[in-house]
Image 1 (cartoon, rainbow, N blue to C red):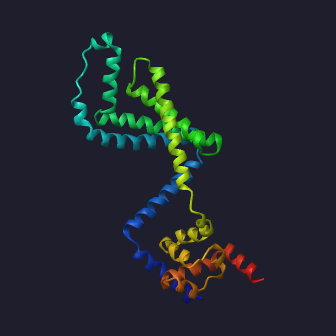
Image 2: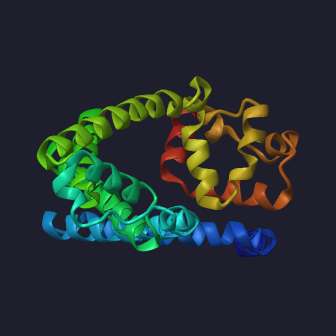
Length: 265
């Protein structure tokens, strides 16, 4: 028994050493992200909204600042309108503001993106807490708010700020709603994946997700997990070390062990 445990530990150490450093970094990042989300879910609504809005705004500001460096040359070529232009032609002044908003420097774009991403994330957080789900309606409400705030902060459109804010909000909401529906359509897993949900979870926990294709090739579905043997795993070309980890996990998992007893009756 002790030798078996030592063999499993050696297999785990060997697998960790064989892992790509990038994969290890990604796994570590996912662990930190999961811990942060778990902590955030325990906080009150105001705290969660504040944290989500601030972090999303910071990310948006970074993206906007980077994009602003790319459009800096364009913004420098836009002439500054004379002070009397606003009173002479409001529509022309609005066009100047729109051009500056779209081709502003790093600070302007950082501000614009920070507002868009921060407001969107904050409203999405509130809607999810209130409605208990994320759907196209919540997504469109968040997009409307971010579009309206972007219009007010950037000064895009004509002199009527309220009308422009509503128009921009509606445009953002329609675009976000369409993207949400497209994403939902293409994010649905293939039909065959429902037969490998437990298998995928087990392999991910063991860091052996690369061998999911081996299970599928051998048609080793979730229902076969209690029946797995070393020879079955060898037949689908899984190396000895991962085979030890998989069999040890199956032996220790109470749910799989119960299924094995049920199938043996």
